Structures are given as structure tokens and as C-alpha cells.
Image (cartoon, rainbow, N blue to C red):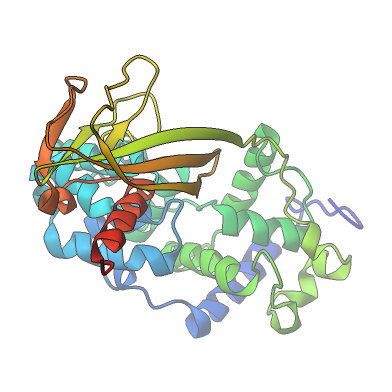
Amino acid sequence: MRGEKADYQEREEPVAGTFAAALLAWYRENGRELPWRQTRDPYAIWLSEIILQQTQVKQGWNYWERFMQRWPKVEDLAAATEDEVLREWQGLGYYSRARNLHYAARQIVDLGHFPDTLEEIRQLKGVGDYTAAAIGSIAFGLPVAVVDGNVYRVLARHFGIDTPINTTEGKKVFAAMAQSLLPEDSRSVAAYNQAIMDFGAIQCTPQSPRCFKCPLWDTCEAAHTDSVEELPVKQKTLRVRERRLSYIYIRCRGKVAIHRRGAGDIWQGLWEPYLENEEFKPDLKGWFTILKREVKHVLTHQVILADFALLQTDEPPQLPPDYIWVEENDLDNYGVPRLVERLFRVVRLYDEEPD
């Protein structure tokens, strides 16, 4: 704690009531109007939570609408192929979410109903504690608190907690506090969970929070100890490494060679053009190099420096057996990583340039 250390457990009831009431009042006036909040359909709510993992609302909104339009029921999503789901997900990144989403849809269909207990919801592929709490409270009114980045920030600042949020101790402290602050009226739990998340996203933002017009100003520890910008605390553990990839876009008689990425690396299950490697190097004699570029692509844990060459030949070269030749006009039917999508765009722009 910062400043005068306060034991929130000793004043749990009055703090919980005041804190929750203030957030609910703020939410009624300022809460975001999102389409998945207009329904109690657990499928629609679950879909939104999976899409919004590692994704901002403004980007995820369109994807949610596209998924709901194409697969309006969980049975429809379960019946889709993984390729179809990955293709629809293209551009969102963290593609394991899409694979988990597809797998979980089949879990739900096999179960015969959408799981409605916290324990059952947690059994769905790709669903952790936060997502289970969000689905359980919003879709089924379960009295469980959500704890995400926004919640960490609001609680850390308001109660002046400097325990690192990415430590075991920190997770326990914040989970216990979040649960203790739930409103007593179970009918308000869903609204409260959404209120505290919106409050963190709109009011108590990471940078330049709107402290000058905050309903919690009077009781905010960070505001009165000038530590808003310092909280929450997070231990620095992330190591970003640089990685180089060399792609060759092989064009032969209107077709392009691609292969599906395997397990154990980024972009599992997505497609990409020929990727040079030490084990197999094709004979480049007689190939005509049209274009060469280098593209930088930043991921959470990696910075990708991709060399990219567009090569044209009239004779298909010998490639590893996992490569297939597809019509160039059909490339949009294959799910590809954002980096590869950018490379394909380079080719299209080149083709569209006047001679």
C-alpha cells in the first residue's frame, strides 16, 4: 500500500457498497453500448470475450458481427472447418484463440447445452479464470468478479496497492479484493463487472486518466498520494527477440506455392508462401526475380524481419512435400498471418503498377 496503509478487509462492507454503487452510477451514464451487451445469449457473450482477448473493442466489434452473421449459433460454428474459422479470424492475431474457439464450440455441442456453472465454463478450450467469470456473471448472473487489466488498474490506484499484478501474490490479492467488492444484490453483478471494466477503459485509463472528473476521486489513494502514473506495478519479465524469415513468393503459370505452418511455432495452422530453410534449398537457376523487399513485423515476444522475394518461373521447382500449388486468384480463401497478408499486398500493388 502507498501512503497510510489501509486494510481494505477491515472496512469491506462500507467500501464495497460505496465503491460498487459509484461505479454502477457511472456506468449508467457512461457505459459503452456494445451489441453483445444487448443479449443474454451465452454463445454471443462467449464469442465476444474470446475475440476481445488481446484485442481492442473497436477492432473486435467487426469480427464479432462477422462471426455472428456467418455462424449465428454455436452448432453452426462447430460444423465449420478449422480453415474457415482461421480465414474469418485473419488479421486478429493470436491465432490459437481461433483454434480454441472452434474446438470449444464442438465441446459445447457435444455437451448438449452451453455450460452454466463456473467449473463447466472453465473446461472450455481457451477459457481462463477471467473469461469464465465474465461469461458466468454476464450470461448467467453468477456472483463472481472479473479481473482483467482494467480491473487491476482501477483497484491498484483506488486502494494504493503496489503489489506487482503479474506475481502469484498480486493475483491472489487482487482476486480477493475484486470478489469482496461485488454488490450484494446478485442482479447487479453483471452490470458491476461491465462497469469496472468500462471504467478502466474510459475513465481510469493507462495514460492521462480523467482524474479531474472522477466519481471516485475522494476515496482514491493514488490520486491523493500523486501515484496515479506509477500504478499498477508490473514486474518486467518480457524478453523480445529478433527473428529473420525469408519468404519466396513462387509464381508459376498462374499458381503459387504455399504450405500450412505446423505446430510448435507462431501462426500454427495458417498458410504461407515458400519459406527458405537450411534443410531444403531449391535450385534457383532459371528463375526470374521480379521484386525484393524487407518487411518488419512486431509481435508481443518477437520482432520479425522478413525478406521477401517475388520469383516467376515457367517450370515448377521441386519443393518439400507439404507444399501445394493453388490458383493465385484463390489465395484469399486461405487463412494467412498478418505478415503474409502484407506480403501478398505488396505483390498485388506491384502487379497493379503501370508498365
